[in-house]
Amino acid sequence: MNILLVYPEFPDTFWSFKHALKFVMKKSSSPPLGLLTVAAMLPATWEKRLVDMNVSKLKPADLAWADMVFVSAMAVQRDSVLDILPKIKAAGKIIVAGGPLFTAEPEAYPDVDHLVLNEAEIPLPLFLSDLGRGKPQPIYATDEFADLTKTPVPLWELIDLRYYDSLSLQFTRGCPFNCDFCNVTALLGHKMRLKTTKQLITELDKIYDLGWRRGIFIVDDNFIGNKRVLKEEVLPAMIDWRKGKKGCLFTTEASVNLSDDNELVEMMVKAGFSQVFIGIETPDDVALAECSKSQNRNRDLVSSVQKLQQMGLQVMGGFIVGFDSDDETIFQRMIDFIQKTGIVTAMVGLLQAPNGTQLYQRMLREGRIRTDFSGDNVDGETNMIPMMEISKLKAGYRKILDSIYSANGFYERVRTFLKNYRPQRQSVSLQPSEIGALFKSIFEIGFKSKERKEYWRLFFWTLFHCPKKFPLAITFTIYGYHFRKVNELHVA
Ligand code: B12
Ligand code: SF4
Image 1 (cartoon, rainbow, N blue to C red):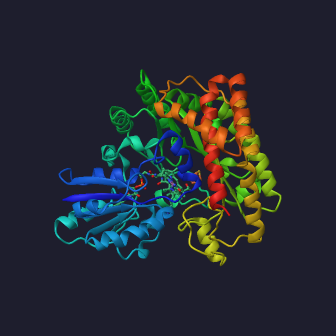
Image 2: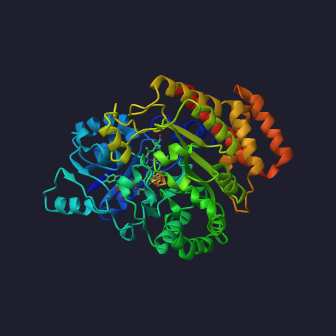
Image 3: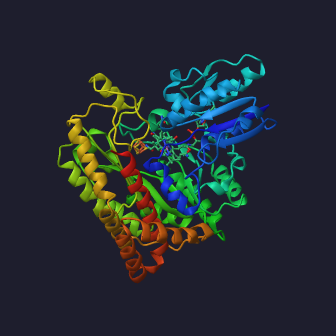
């Protein structure tokens, strides 16, 4: 049996990092981990090929080779999915689809022959068994959560690693918190489910043996959801794994209470964590109460972020405006807050209510669901009717983006961050693409772009004040370039 696994194309969004990737000669920020994991669950004797449409085209010859085509997607890839499904169908191939998009809106894709929804670990074996008996059903779903200790090692060998900026792996699923707008807990539950430490180290070994030395994104929704296991087993094993190795610094997602636990932060940094994405959401305590983000309340969020930066972690942040309690002062307060924290990668979105969330249920009860969820939470759209007049909300949102991504605002934030950040000694492996990125940044940003004055100011400021942070400063100029491009092009 020949199986073609297809990952549809992402649009040009803040998250795609498309305009930044060309500086490091990469085509995509990360590979389709869901499909690579599903591929590992298929019989070993089946032939498998993967086409990630973010790095290469889906060619007629690929389709001609396949007996069945497995498609995975997030909602943000919907347009590409709608484009390719009829083409796969026209080629006479059986389509099997799964992943977040199809799980959220299974009825919307009549071209799909077999929907295998939720976590594939549970429904996929049932599909394979029915297929073996010649009686595959149109839909397989489950409301149980998978046991991750049974999840196989993803087949990273199906992709060409050279095209990706970072690789991803997953250690846990679920999150103990209860933020009302978040569908992670609806999809994956509150109980933390973990792989074993042995599984994690096996996956790291495999990635390293494949020659990978760039960053690794541990895509857990909240890596610190089970601190005891991390401190007693996982981090000691990761610290041990890192000995004598170069590169492979980790990024992950965590809740802000990470900053309360010095021991945990120190161990993570020692294990090679260099970046952490945190859902900060808003500086407004009433809005935090409204969305049940209890872990962010009753604390000085700026100090929490700065403490992590001082301990060696770069903090990326997610922010939201459009809560019911937000008034028109929120926009300037949000700008001031983001600037003060020095969070360079600040992703600000309008509050949206994804299907399955508590917020969605409340909006439904209140008759405030307006459209479908676009799938991109930073596109300046919302599927709900906000309390604030929508035109005012959008104008305020626009003001935030224009301010934080403006050359002035952005470069000032980079300097705030560089002053506060104390990187720990981590063994990095400088890639030729990074040297190329420096020269490209000089050409594209230093000479061609409108922000060239700010670029050179930061360039020399960093060389004089903190030369060791110079590579990081250049990386940020490239991120800034991407954010400004997307802001100009798409958030009208
Ligand atoms: C890593 C990640 C990213 C990364 C990398 C994405 C990539 N290239 O794969 C980045 C940071 C780029 C990203 C960006 C975004 N993401 Co994202 N992301 C995730 C995250 C945290 C983990 C995904 C992952 O790799 N999981 C590990 C693998 C093993 O699990 P999986 O992909 O779900 O696959 C399993 C099942 O879904 C199923 N399955 C998957 N595919 C298939 C296919 C077949 C055929 C079958 C049978 C089964 C199957 O089986 C797998 C094994 O159980 C998830 C949250 C989560 N925990 O799932 C959100 C999530 C997927 N992201 C989401 C969103 C909304 C986004 C963004 C729009 C912004 C945002 N709000 O975060 C952007 C859009 C991307 C863009 N370029 O514009 C939503 C998707 C919601 C939806 N209905 O589409 C999720 C669920 C988070 C959330 N709660 O909102 N994301
Ligand atoms: S902490 Fe993050 S992953 Fe957990 S429920 Fe809140 S938004 Fe979702």
